[in-house]
Amino acid sequence: MNKFFDIDEDKEYKYKILVYPNITYQRKLENDSYIVVLKNVIEVVNKLRDDVHWTLLLPYSTPSVDHFDNVNILVYDMPSYPNAMRTHFDFNKIHDLIDWTRNDYDIVYSHLPEHTLQLSNFFYNNTNIMPKIIGYCHWFEVDENTGYEKRMLMHNIAGVLEMEEMGVNSIWLKNHILDKVKDIYSKKTLDKLEKIIQPHYLGVDEIDIPDRNKQIGLTNFVFNHRPNEYTGFNWFVNAMNEIWKERQDFRVYFTLADVNEPWATKPKKEQVISRKDYMNYLKKMDIGIGTFEKYSAWSISTTDGLSHGVPYVLPNNLVYPEMLGNDYPLLYDNREHFKKLIVKLINEQDLRNEAHLWIEKNIQDFTWENRVSKWFNNWDIFNLSLASRTESYEKIVNFIKSKNSVTKKEILEYMGWGIRIPFSPYRNLLRTESNIKLTKDRYEWIT
Image (cartoon, rainbow, N blue to C red; front, side):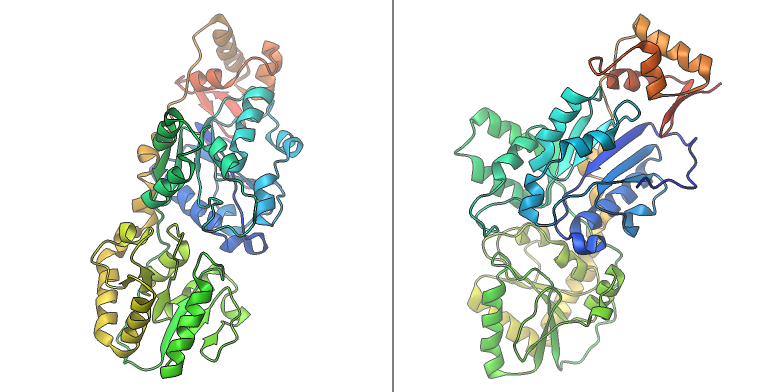
């Protein structure tokens, strides 16, 4: 499906970006963290400049990204099981969707490094497009977070090496991945990875902090992470069972798990249909919980709560000291400390007030606009290689001038060019011509 109905086809778009997805929650695509990140990236870049057009490969259209005037959706089916998704690259489907004789992409923004070597190979060997390749990765298959025997980390690293820069959501995660591959690659390759992988800190959606002048009573905790081993799910349930034996003045709400315990509950389906519903639901919680032990990149589930005034109890290791700082009051050192902190939060308003004060003081630093605007060296990624001003180039310029408006396909047919002559350097040079305007699908002569 191509999503362009009432869009101004004459709008100038100097740059076209193709975004390759990493989707782990296809059933509710609107709630997948990839869509949450991408929506905010597009929004911020649109504020920075108005000459970028985005083409997204997605299994189906979704409102968060479909509403932008400068976004086009191409339907690309991928397996829903995450490990299968990371192994499945459909060359023929990609070939048909890209349609290289008619389309151009200046930048490929891959969120799935496991496919990025294939993407690079596809473009450079099977089209006349030579895009700059950049990326972002929010998930690496490593021992600490992956339960199955065989993993895709080596494919991931092969794709990273094709990128000029790849963002990860923390320095901790960058160092963790480099440590995982330090015995496999040469120092030269590790130095290259060190340069390519850069922290791209994630942001928060709208900040909506309610009045927290609530008297101590029944305490509502929320565990809005997946019920997996890496999230500490099982030991968290055991810890709350131990606390329940001593007192029953709390409840824990699980948004992604069914827990059969007297202190556990789950929102009704109608309460969390949309992401807006979910955020409003979070806002009613008193305290959020994060019990990661071996692995945790900075999670959107945590920032969701913080942006709505919900402080989180989190481990004093992994990514959390980096992201929150030493003055954050709810970092715990071990499991026993965790239980003591939970009991203290149930008992004492002062500790809750201290945590709320921290949020009010620091949350503005977490906005998407503040974070995303700094990625890729303040989005200095639009310097692209140019062709020489040859006789062939002048012939293209004169052809556009004579026709006033032409497509890429018409240029290729006029020049008699096929797949062996890279078109991207010529497109990049055409972008510098004051009399030529690049639109979504055409090259136009202006006077």
